Length: 335
Image (cartoon, rainbow, N blue to C red; front, side, top):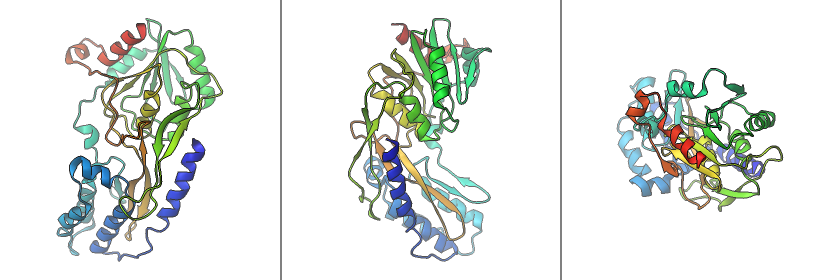
């Protein structure tokens, strides 16, 4: 699988090297046109988002072009271009300058959090263990609990061996990735490989092959290969909320196809496009989704993945110091 992803990255880098063949001037209009063109030729979800909510990138150009004025300040230009990128409704799309980072966060901000640091501390207690990016403990009903806050935090094979060996007496395992905004896809694959016992189809990938909105390579399979180290055979619950994004969203996609795994919580935030970056004439950087990834049925996960059990933290439970989602998972695993 890593080889497959590496091949896609090489293809994307080759494509990115052609972005600036047509030089744009370092003016307000030149930077605006350069940004629109980069997205027009390399963004990967135009067809899908046109279908979902009627996105028309040409109409977006016309809408924001009238706001461009050569007398505007760089901050005003940045605001206009960030607003334009917001039309994509994509958390992977960012405009970066020395002064600011343009971003779209409505994919999570418009939804309940369904996670509490206060409750997390209560369930972990004081004597939990830390193995690199993993916090873990055994709950009082002999359920293992692992908290992974971000896939930007490295986990090695040795870390996973020690965690799973320590939790081996447990009758079930909770993996809590709520509010995990993603990071390195390698760590998502490394963790998921501990729960699969034969090569398993977990999804598909494509990459852009030309400037047209529908120019893509054929679907290529994503195969998750079992780890050669310690693997977990007992039931698992993966806890999710809207803050689960990017590599964390991919991890949920991998785990959802496994027979002994249940996804519990809220719909994930999505972010299924592998991001790439390019530069504007004035030196600003734009990041965008360039390589679409799909689930094992070939469906889009850009706007999130539904849980097997849609559970929210209730106000009553929160006031009592209870995490409704964790408790529901414990009930499932006890059965």
